[in-house]
Image (cartoon, rainbow, N blue to C red; front, top):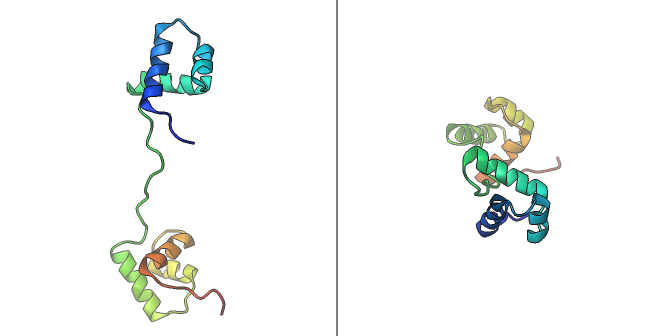
Length: 114
């Protein structure tokens, strides 16, 4: 779902602040839900801003720098090791998927069958 524009947010807040309409009437007029109006006004009350919250994000990779180099060395030592074995030997507390993503960054291919 797309975030609502700042123009719409400003118009909704202005309509609510005038006190001429109820929240239900404002929601019907602008084609939005009353719960969204409630959350918008609550955000303004708590933070002083009606700007949308940042969507998504970026999580730093678990294997980077020396950990990534160590993973490369482990693969060179034993190329047929499973992802789980490599994770355990690396000493990094992570998921198997994190090891897989590190392999993708290193441009390694894993054989899926023996």
